[in-house]
Length: 124
Image 1: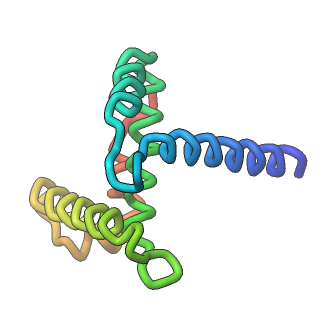
Image 2 (image 1 turned 30 degrees about the horizontal axis):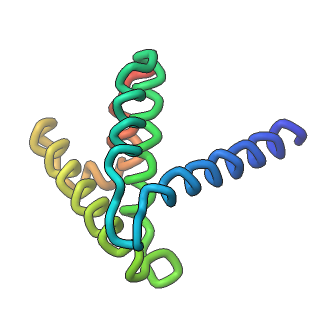
């Protein structure tokens, strides 16, 4: 039980730090200051390859989750473009898997937990 509570606290802390970091990239609620994000991305490209793989998996999992969340409790004017683009990416990925594996899109969706983009990354 202690481990689960510790993980939840760590996840919340990391989420708060991410919120502070991404929030600091906006000026006047319109313009993104590119140098901060670009510096972060450049640094990530220099990290250990396993760290890069884990970070990519986390980003894909986030996009998968955003695409699956629908309705006013999850989407409003502040994040509707994110949801729309994430959903578009996932739909295109479904088509890609179906075509490359010669299976139906329905089959991919039926077994989505197996075919999700985040599952396509190998564990190293």
